[in-house]
Length: 114
Length: 113
Image (cartoon, rainbow over all chains, first blue to last red; front, top):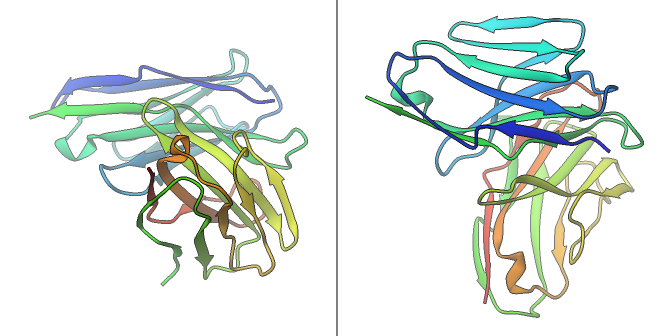
């Protein structure tokens, strides 16, 4: 089945710097890659997603890139702010026999220092 | 307001005492799922359901049961809880389409002594 690896597990940046989180997936049939943000004590929420027919997608300060050949995708956050501090999860959609079951990475704890 | 509601939000129980965590969604979603979140292990799927009366195991189903008798409800049952089931549990739902946003409940923090 699908396996999603996420790196790094923790990331600390200075306010205003950029942050990059990378994920690799194993199932070449996966074609949907969302990113979820979980603030401390709260539920995960979708912040951006990308489909396999697109190489890059942007939404203000966040962007996601996808390299299907290498089977990896990344989340880019520019001009980081303290409110970006959270745990970020990548995920891949596993078609296989599960008819579309999201498989999550283990998460990256991002800390943005003022 | 569109939401996924879990109850209880917090529970401390003892080994072997059966408990049920309820999950209800008001968005008419076909797909529902349960995850547990543990430090360093991310979100691991316990069970999921594609529609009424259709359930399947996720990555860590041992010690759990689910049922999907109605579209809106997807309870998680721990028949005989053990300390290794101490965790933060999330219920989630989405439309059946494969690329739909997954909506999470607020989470249920369970401690088994």
